[in-house]
Image 1 (cartoon, helix red, strand yellow):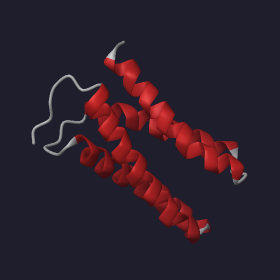
Image 2 (cartoon, rainbow, N blue to C red; image 1 turned 90 degrees about the horizontal axis):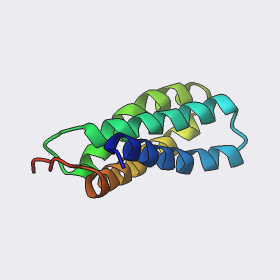
Image 3 (cartoon, rainbow, N blue to C red; image 1 turned 120 degrees about the horizontal axis):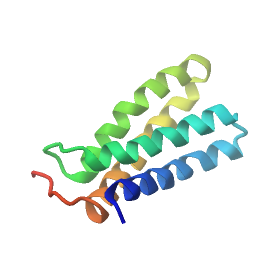
Length: 111
């Protein structure tokens, strides 16, 4: 299977994991769609990112950096959503980086 397709599948899996609690909380479809698309994009970014860090830490950093704008938007209307959002960004980003490193990466990362 092509690396790009695997990256899309990993990102989609992470997105589904993040969207499930949102659906149960009654979030609108705009938020659910934006969250899913964010993780699909992050699946590609984290897979192809070449940072001098281990895979899980690269995913953690990229997940956090892309989660901060979402957190700022959420803080405007519901400040209590910021810590779970950032925690989810850290955990799923790290897991996505680890999975991409173990399952997909062709070129080893520099350590």
